Length: 384
Image (tube, rainbow, N blue to C red):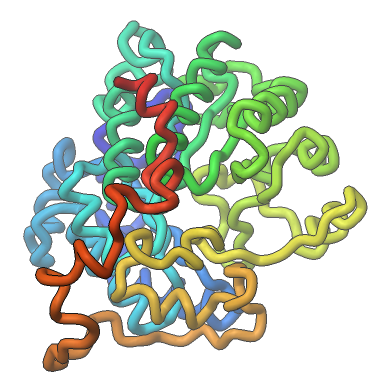
């Protein structure tokens, strides 16, 4: 990664990779081996998470990409997403860090959903020496908010959220939630918010900092539920809360996030996943049924375009319950061709619109659902 976040244990450097016998990136064979084993276990999502633009900081990363024929890391991510779709049937969810508008256009056809944590809008934690994000170009809040807006403009179902306990004040925490609400109301593209609590890790600059309090996490979930409204989807990672599941459900979460039967939580390797059966039982105790979803939320599946690229629709529909949009537990997980076949275009429908639309078609200047179909006009007015 080209960033230097003071709490990150996920990041590594080329020297350590060489010492441990690893390449700069997982090879295609390594990627597909994990994905195939996941499909055999009934998984339906391949989470691709990585550092921000490592080739900008590390010559070894640039050399690896050049040697394997990729212009940049995003191009490699795209190629692997296509192979995962075609050879395993898993749906890629992409977390490659800060993405440009062009990156979204390149990745949208190969992944039903993407994500990037906002973490905080507190600029001082990035700009002032000693701050947890100091020296990390991709952690400037304005840059990350721009990514969220570009995801909305590109109609990409997007996951974001907050990281609590890294030095922000309560007011800054609230400002971050309101910033996320503004983007969500403007574009309706924020499919889920993750409210994550900081846990100190050894061998990091912030190893001596206290963990975020559970009470703080519960309170922030509750406030997020009020701010984002009843239709928002809120997640708290279950492996970071030491079994306080009922408190989080009572505070307002409705999602436990991805829990893998195969791989560790690479971002929090010291925190093992809970058993699915335990999560289901504890959710039932709180009055809820635990259901499996896909990486893209049901409302985006039922809407189809523009949220899902036509090349992805067969892959998503193969795994989705047509009634609910949640995962179909009986669906076989198997690869499907990604590229649409070449077919001759056959015209269908009316061909006289240029002559008849104003006389026999719609006669008003606006469609009936004008007030809500394009987004939240009040939020747009506020932004303007």
